[in-house]
Picture 1 (cartoon, helix red, strand yellow):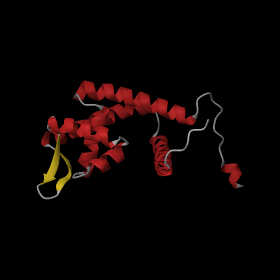
Picture 2 (cartoon, one colour):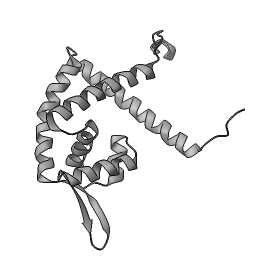
Picture 3 (tube, one colour):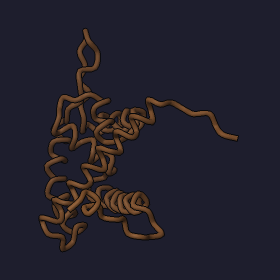
Length: 165
C-alpha cells in the first residue's frame, strides 16, 4: 500500500470543509449563547473565560484571550464586566501591577453549575455519536485548531501585502 492509497478525497460539495465547520460552530455558539443567557445570565464568551480562569488561575489576560481565541480588547471588556459582577478578581500587586485573574466565590459557584449543565447540553448536541466517534472528532478538531493557529501566526508575521490592481 502506498502513501497515496491512504489519502481520502474530500467529498464533492457546494460547501467547503471550512464553510461547514464555520456554520456548525456558529450554530453551536448561537444555541450556547441562548442557553447560557437563559440559565445563567452570561454569554458564551463569559463561560469560556470563567472556565479557563477556573482551570488556570491565576492567569493573565493575554493567556486567557489566546486560549479563548478572542482579541485582547474584547477580553479586557469582558473581564471588566465579570469583575464588576463580582465573578472574577483582577489580582494586583502595589509593586508589580497586574498579577493575574482568578475567580471570586460567585464565579467558582457558577463554574460548578456550568459543569452539569454543559454535560447535558453536550449530550444533546452530539446526539447518538459513540464515545469513539466523539474522540475521533476531538482529535480532528485539535489538529485543525493547531493548523489554524500556525496559519494565523504565519500570516501575522508576514504582514500586509500590497493590493493588486
